[in-house]
Length: 532
Image (cartoon, rainbow, N blue to C red):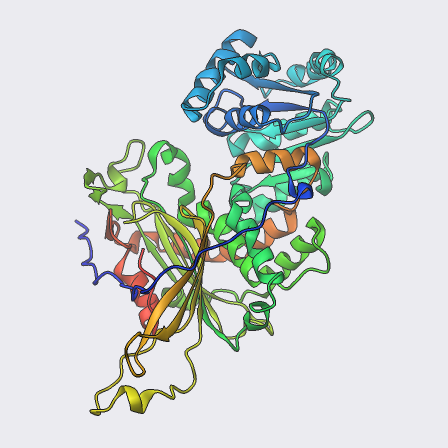
């Protein structure tokens, strides 16, 4: 029987004292509002699935209620569920009410639902796709969408290829009358080979400019803010390099378990689920060079350059660069929770990792020698997503003789720390040293903190749906970036899966900070993870 490894003392950051800096913001200029897209029809394959009920339809309804959708639009859903327009509208009304229990408007829903349509479909049948143009044409004429079509793959990844080939075969990918775009959710492939294959399938029908690979993390407000913060503030960009930065930490931790995703998670694990997309996207935004202009093509080019510059993980020394974990039983928010292996749908001897920590280096002029530490896991003690930039310590502390009058060793001064908080309390904080009041030369860390204090106008899915309608690919992942990310991780995954029987799972209790080995990954470098 595998025993859970003992946990080290929880890392503790020295808590900055003093008042937080007050943030004063200017009124929003008129031109900074949300761009309203042009008319279009949104065709959702898998319209009765979990993604449609939790995200897509509630997001579109919320955009409609806020006045962000065009006058001309309709939503055409298809799935295997035997129902019609009325049944589909009822299912989605329940989903929208659950998503917005306090603000749901029956009157607005009635107007919105008049644009919802549904047909039962067999996605393996060429006849269904051959009949789609005739089904869509009267809706396009009624709502004036000019034959602009967005095809959304709210489907299991195994079905993507079939549906996209059928769309191309039925002529639905052509742009003779209006535009035709396809939206594909992650996971985009399972490894380098499958990702490249899927790119080829899509490219046979849809050009890259019409392909929208979804990573909703890119649409989170403070992820979008990374580039603005870096390149619009001259006090930070000159310091954003190996001369001044000691290391970078990227954390995405969850208190939730695998929940209803056991079938997917058993084959994917945390590296495919979080690192190949979310984590590496955050890394590329943090490390990229300034683009020539703020347009999607130039930004995505610079992100790709970062991924090309990442040093391959040494497969013969994986233990010094990668740590995996799987949660055991424990307590979350005062409640007992079961181990991953006891979750519904999970193999009792599963070796699927639910936690990973990784150390990478970027071999270019800006970042040479600076380690990037990344971690993500389920059933951890706190849910948060952040990027922490730890600056180098001052080269010489001139106050040492004043601070050590009795020859006592002086307590180490914390280097400056900049934290970009993605969630839940979105904002930016900067920790620096000041003189402690009424002392001769004692220092204390204080925190300058900016927080987004009001609810965002758009959540991540609403943002990317509107961007897809306007054709803006800034917050979507290019095929090149997908393949580069897989090219980095696939050799690691192959090596790990060859020795998976030696993992010794579970190796961290639910509610903890993760496996002991993850702490050692940084401790051996003389560093320590920020506390969750």
